[in-house]
Image (tube, rainbow, N blue to C red; front, side, top):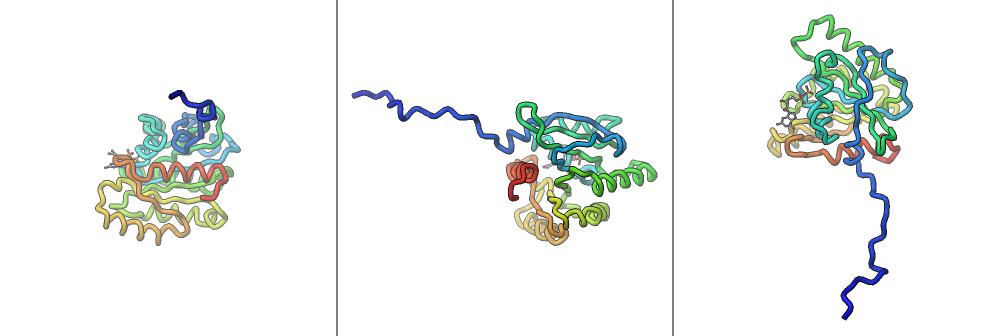
Length: 223
Ligand code: GDP
């Protein structure tokens, strides 16, 4: 008996499919800017990550991009108050931008500096032309704070005009199942039209879902 596979059974060679996680892994540092007018004008769809400092934003970006240091580059002295842009796209061909905005609400920052940053961030959210989506990170044990609510108010008109918006409830591993469900329903009420997702870098919860959302949003797929 001939045990060798027939030619018809041979696997068909095809280009590997681009998975959202593979695509996220391509993230590379593009540029950093202390002021809005220093940001390059770009055509690619941009997704901004925002949140209070300590909400878990750097850890989230590093988890999504499967890189240990990418977003912590944003925490280097001198870059903490900057908007840091990362390019995404296979084979070095950029097709989307990830913007890491400075964490807000950090107590040790001087009042004037805080006010300046809120203004820069507000201007960015209102006026960045290629902004396609905003991901607001929130530690559900603290809930949405007054600063988060202020940010929601700023982007509301753009969300009504089609800007995609996701509230990411971080550190979900610290919540019981019922606490997680409760945090989700509260955030859904507050998110006003945006999506809400539980996320844990530690347990890799919500990672694939967020990567898929970002891919859909930046490639004009239905979310
Ligand atoms: P950022 O200031 O928003 O960039 O916050 P970081 O990413 O630096 O995270 C703040 C703290 O929360 C750090 O001590 C992280 O280790 C911790 N953290 C972040 N994500 C998670 C998570 O998914 N689970 C747990 N248990 N801790 C996390």
